[in-house]
Length: 246
Image (tube, rainbow, N blue to C red; front, side, top):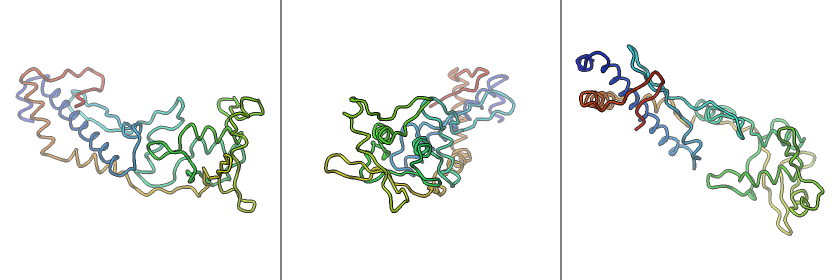
C-alpha cells in the first residue's frame, strides 16, 4: 500500500483495481481447469459459465466471480441452475424434455430420464438434441409455446416413421423407459430412474479462495500493476465494472 500511495492521487486505486481484476481472471481460469478435471467432457457452455464483476478504482475496490444466472431463449435454465447441485450437492433440476414427457402422461411422477443403450449421444455424452426431438415428436409429447410439433398422420410425418418407432416400455403397469424399433432393431433409448442425487463435486469456493489467498500471486499482480502505472501502460477503467481479462 505504501508503494501504491507513492504513485500519486488517481493512480493508486487504479493499480489496485487492476491487480484485483487480474487475480479474478486467474481464479476464473482455475475454475475452468477444475471443471475440466472433475466433469466428464464438459460442454463449452459449462466451461464458459462464470463471469467476473470487475473492481473499480475506489477506496475499497472489490472483484468478484459469479456463475451466470441468466436464462432465456431456447434454454429455460441458467448455468447456476445446472451447477448449483454440483457445488452444494442435492437434487438435479427437471429438464425440459422431462417436463414434456410428464405433461403427456408418459413419465411417472418422481421419475427422471437418463440415456439408454440405444440413445445417440453427442461428443459430450448427452443425448443428441435431434434424437430427443424425434422421441418427443414420436410420442406426441412435443408441445412448445402453444404449438404442437408432434408426429401426425400426414404423409410427410408417416415417412419419417417416428410415431411408429417409439413406444413406452413397461414392467407390468409401471413405465420403465422409452424404446425405439426400426425394422428388426429394438433398443431402449431412455430409461426412467429416481431423481439423481449429486454429491459435492465442483469445489467452486475452494478454487477461488486458493487463488485469492495466494499472497505471492497477488503481490506479483500488484507489482505488475504498479510497473504498468509508472510506464503509462495501466488500462483505464471507467465507471463500469470492467478491467484486464488476461
